[in-house]
Image (cartoon, rainbow, N blue to C red; front, side, top):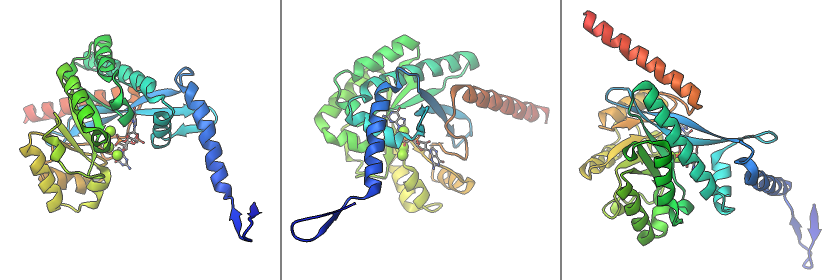
Length: 288
Ligand code: C2E
Ligand code: MG
Ligand code: MG
Ligand code: MG
């Protein structure tokens, strides 16, 4: 695998590089057909109030199961879909499915859950985004206030003026906007003055690296509240972390401690179970 060069040195071609390049090409080709072949499914992860411990909403997380490659992680295929120009079509499909599914749940359980959908940088650059969101809402009957769009800081600062315009368009529909993965990038908060953001989602790494009662976490939560933002902590895995965040006045949590992302049917079972448990708690309360 080494090729002699003119100056007598050798250039090595790493076999792993070939494997990675080959997989990439195969995934690219497969991704192109994934939607038509019904290989995508939206899973949902509950977002829980740290005050009442009840489920307030869910985040839609896309899953891709390929007959040959198996489950491909979003962190691998989403960037690929962005690069290859598929994210617009895929993103629109996710929006439609998420709005429909949560509308159905709310009708069935008499709940008012909200659903958060991740929006990538490229989608934010697209002039169609506002119309796509409007279409997903109209097509499902989900109230705009029940839809939240998760944007990353890096996507927003790519083009501040264009982002501001798209965000204004989205806000005029009545949807909520959140900053995802806060604490991983610049995390300047200065753009919060510029953009109509409602929710700050603290990244899992930020949550995990900050020991219980960390002053930094408290400061960020305090600042977010002062700016009228509600705060969600991502990736809560232990009761210790949950308690510390609750002490720090964090509003909501999301993480394996509460529930993993799951298919719609499992989410319905999870919610039915939660309803039974809170019903029992109320009965016990009134029996005392
Ligand atoms: P994200 O939006 O920050 O989503 C949270 C990620 O953390 C999810 O990974 C979720 O499964 C994971 N997670 C939740 N709780 C825990 C926990 O307690 N411990 C650990 N270790 N992980 C936890 P997932 O589903 O693999 O998605 C990864 C990323 O892919 C998402 O990060 C999001 O940026 C992107 N993504 C997923 N679905 C979509 C989509 O439909 N559209 C776009 N544009 N991006 C998506
Ligand atoms: Mg997200
Ligand atoms: Mg996140
Ligand atoms: Mg993340």
